[in-house]
Image 1 (cartoon, rainbow, N blue to C red):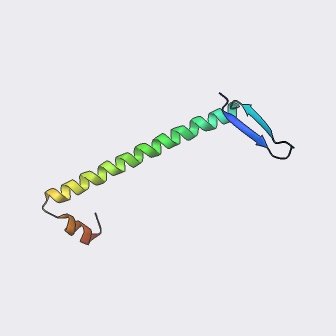
Image 2: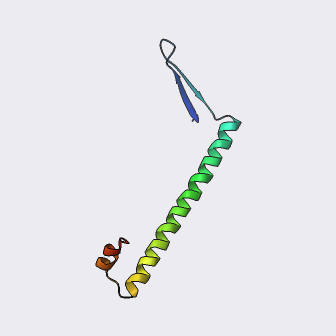
Image 3: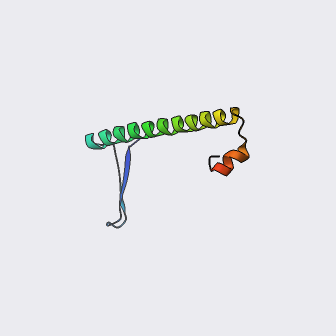
Length: 73
């Protein structure tokens, strides 16, 4: 299966071309995937840290109402 399907609407009928990524596109795709995975990992770590912080506050005796009043929940 081709990586790219391009449609040229300047022709009648439109011309459809299927091709694989060139070297620059392959490199960009690899960089995009690496960036996405790093962002996804950072987001998951932030969620875990938030949950741990909430658990700690709750274990200190604060309630969810207390946290809501502080704008934390």
